[in-house]
Each structure stands twice: as C-alpha cells, then as structure tokens.
Length: 97
Image 1 (cartoon, helix red, strand yellow):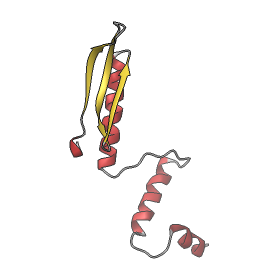
Image 2 (spheres, one colour; image 1 turned 90 degrees about the vertical axis):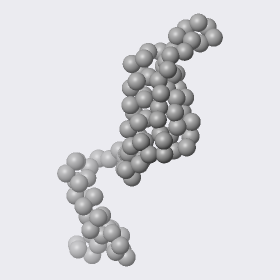
Image 3 (tube, helix red, strand yellow; image 1 turned 60 degrees about the vertical axis):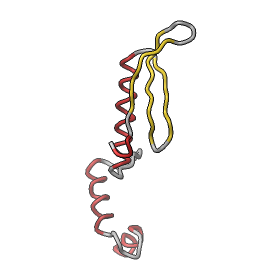
Image 4 (tube, one colour; image 1 turned 180 degrees about the vertical axis):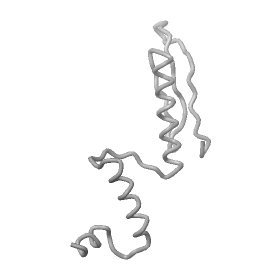
C-alpha cells in the first residue's frame, strides 16, 4: 500500500482481564487504534481500512448517490471528456437544452 499504510490485528488483555483484539495502523497520516471483542470483527475492520487506503491511493472517493451504476459510469465518462474545458458540466447541459 502507498505511504506504508499497514494495519495489524493483535490480541491483548484489558486491565479487567478480558481478551480483546486491536486494529492498529495509520490512514492519511492519522493513527488508528480500535478495539474489538472478536478477532473476526477486528479482521473485518482491518480489511475496511485497507480498502479505504487503496481507494485513497488510487484517487477514488466513496459517495452515497441515487444514481444507478450505468449513470455513474456515464457521468464519469462525461467528466473525463470535459477535462480542461473552461465551463462546468451544468453549463454544457443547460446550453444543449
């Protein structure tokens, strides 16, 4: 992963004697350390954090949208075609109406 982004899952014992699982690492330069009751929950969090790191390294952004998958692909395609143009997508759509 870029920027040496790695996450580790380790077992540790709390002060009260209960065993927990910890995910530890860095994302966007910030240290992340979270505790979980089960190893499976910690592993799932580790995977989610690693995915976020990969997406950030690839310049991808997560966003909630009401667009369908084919609409998203079309929008991405149009934005690529308009790269370097002086006006916004909205301007071109308004002009075409």
